[in-house]
Amino acid sequence: MEFTGAHILSINQFERADIERIFAVADSMEPYALRRKVTRVLEGAILGNMFFEPSTRTRVSFGAAFNLLGGEVRETTGFESSAIAKGESLYDTARVLSGYSDVICMRHPMSGSVAEFAEASRVPVLNGGDGSNEHPTQALLDLYTIRQELFDKGRNIDGLRIAMIGDLKHGRTVHSLCKLLCLFNNIQVTLVSPNELAMPENVVDMLREAGHEVIISDDLTRGISSVDIAYSTRIQEERFSSKDEADLYRGRFRLNQSIYTKFCEPNTVIMHPLPRDSREDANELDNDLNQNPNLAIFRQADNGVLVRMALFALVLDVVDQVDKYSRDVNWYSGR
Ligand code: NCD
Image 1 (cartoon, rainbow, N blue to C red):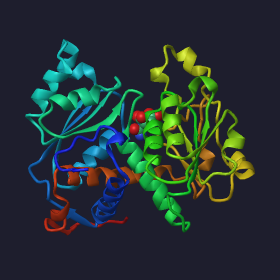
Image 2 (cartoon, protein in one colour):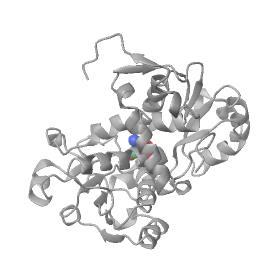
Image 3 (cartoon, helix red, strand yellow):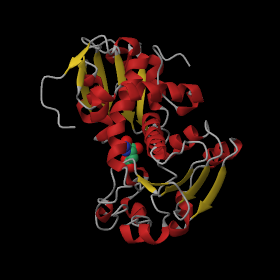
């Protein structure tokens, strides 16, 4: 695909070569993300960071990625602080805000809303999550992490065995990740969820059409027993009609160190898009896994900065200039 000026809305827009390009650019961002070097390549550029749903990692890492490239960030968070609360349409908001920014990142609770916004925008729009539909940049950082974790074990993405666990119906991260895996070969995907929270059929069909093996199960211990990656997810309580309904499923698939030791192959990598629900009645990834070297959740979150820097550099067409505008940092950097 042509990245310059493009919106990043869905995994469907990518081919495998595009993913390899994004990952190669993300690799080249490491000295900046690790604060060994600074670059001013986006000096003067403005990111409009618009988050209409709660977010910590996605919002802050988009902002940090833009800052690390030398640009500035303007944030709008929550409907109540935006004119959308006065009835303004997405179209008008997009026409106005795209006049104030060079690129926009947006999260919104409605499926398809970010694409609708992008149609009216005069600058590239990156989807930070639209309802239960997609979260393409999360899938990219997830796969970037998987590639890194497997590389350390002398493997690559083709031939991967992965279990996805939890609320696969509403979880946009796993929808995008499955679509992304369709660009690779010979993947085994085990989908572990209560029947009512199963992966949407169109996503399962896509995996099968790509030639992948799909195993559907509601048994955590069997599901995680022969995989390279166990990818846990949170019950998306905000997408249920009531908290009581979400409570029916909370805590159903808890993974802790003793279950890991008993049922997982040695060195199975544990992932989660975060936030993990650490309340007692949920505790989907127990804190006793924190010392497990295969718990990749914080490496995953760190990788979000690299991947988002790469996307900004690609859509704003500065990949070849990043180093030209760089220098070593002045301060102590212990990383
Ligand atoms: C996820 C999301 O918002 O879809 N979080 C994230 O962006 N890392 C997952 C979640 O909220 O459960």
